Image (cartoon, rainbow, N blue to C red; front, top):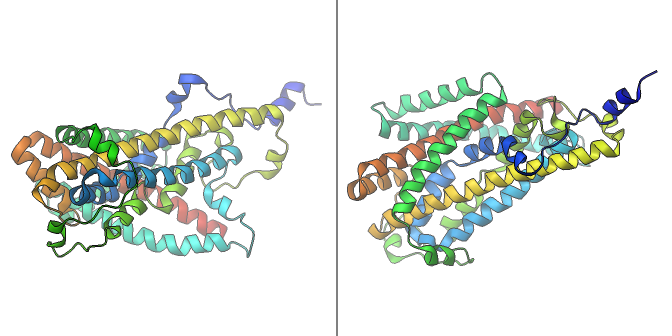
Length: 366
């Protein structure tokens, strides 16, 4: 006959006692992987370019875009904490034809994976070329091979360590530039109120910017905090961290529905406590993302805007670095390049850690 203690252990579904108070911050980890991955070309290029064209008047778009992705990612992560399965298995439980949502995701995200991995390698290679004497082609290969080496083991702690370092490099570099050209709190706060500024005349004269401001702002709204896949990947990072019902589980394991049905009140309360941990973790990712993206916006507004320059693609950050170095010193320009390179490298690492998991889950289910 099983003892009372054995019965209690089974009933709690192996749910550890969640931390409380400030101890919660000691377990923050998926946040660093999430924000290091989603701070990429949308932040380095689009935010800086919007700052150059519109100044701080579109700060609201950054806050809105990241805040919306925050709710999506956090909701998916909460589901993982409560069930122990990732978002792809959740999609498979949507009513309707068998696996229909997963099939849609598989087709769309396979195409997205092929395009985004290649484009990130190209963009990161240009940044590496600006920092060290190596061609952009080999720079892109270097970044991709480095990313593969980081994610090859599949161990979450290794990924978290590298991504935390990348976040630190991003923050240090872009904050230095943003503080140097900071326009004042009044101008910044004014930009938090939704408005759609007009495209300045000098920007129209460049020939590659239209009179419709939404052509510039919508991509920023859409790519701030990454795309659909970034929110799905966050559930994998939560699985790796072992929050709540995710403890001892791994990617590719559907929820144990029968065990979940047998949960007692004590286990449910513990899961509720772990939900607070994931709320804190996701909020940390959101705060870092907003802070860094606004800093790129301020850098563009303070360096490129006054000179009436709005370069395209990777040239946005490279031009800004050159101009900043010529006026405020080479250190700031190099730090900005390092922050941009770290952002793109960490995004590539996140992609090579996330895409295989997402596509493997989709193929397993279908």
